[in-house]
Image (cartoon, rainbow, N blue to C red; front, side):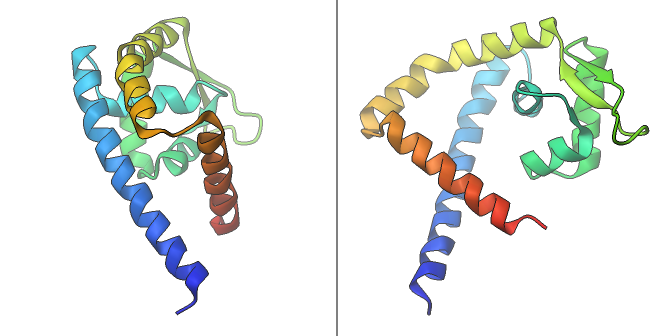
Length: 145
């Protein structure tokens, strides 16, 4: 077996494991703030730039319909707002509102100490994280259709 392909498969397994552990921790933290991890993930995804539901779903690895329900809930709660999409009239872009930013900040603040402690205990450095993120982004780009 090709060693590069083998190690890639092990990396993907590790990413899934990390995502699962992180999600379980995030579920508890989100519940403590009166929200859900699904809402947290959508708010985080659009915190950098407005996105359409299909783009949010791709980024989160979720089906569009599930993401649409969360987006609708967040919009109804005033935490997201729809904007016209110049590329696709029937698929608006969703942007985080000031209320959504406040919720996201509360979630991030509530989780920062625990995650900081975990990172300190792990010995992982800022450079390690940045290299890992760059590697994952390069792989995602290469695998995207």
